[in-house]
Image (cartoon, rainbow, N blue to C red):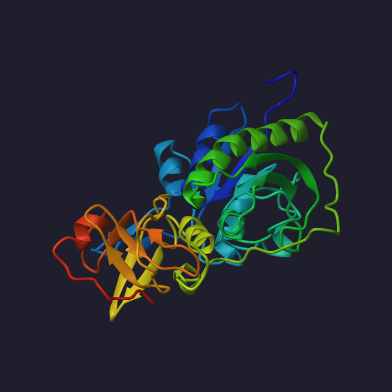
Length: 316
């Protein structure tokens, strides 16, 4: 009991690590997590063995029933969800749209924790696009899911500064921590009957679709700041990459070092010193930190270049 109110009976929907962080926080409250909805086990690693999603792993740890429908229209899944009798379904990065006829299965609805200040950056990758666009501020919102894309009425939100060195992974980690408190506070307010959602404004609507592999390809003819943002936005996933001849190389975020006494480099052109590897951009050269050649592990860029003649070579 909290303040004389009964806890909410919840089924949690989510899939990746960021959702698992929020699930752990929710389990640690008095709200009752009676089930979890997550994406089906998927092949991973060199052996391509089936692996549980991070949310599924947490649910298994606490003995919580796990539903892994390949489609939310599946009749067996729907029967199992109804049998769990949820009062509320909190959602964090689940990865599937909720069919309109399922929105009323819980009296308090499906409550989404979304990592942007709505109505900005509706969609699957708000944090990645915030970093890519060079936004200085982002945040998270809780809202009641409706039939549209992230357009339901808002319960609450907070803001968070984006640091110049943030990767999307860094930022998501912080947002997950603060977002856990926001989601739990939202559920507390719903439970107490003290929280009523407010319609989103019609101005400021933007979208953040899932990043493609091509979105993660570094464009060396961009200014340095664009190259830096793209690499940070796509770290750790999908992962920034570039081509050298027929070989594909993965890249970690750049070192923020000033180029001193370097020759003029064309976009993509490589130049190595004893301690660094530089690549030309549309403005000043970029200093690589770590690089992963095909078939090898991530390594220091200077170590990779040592002993190689990269003069005149070009990333594309």
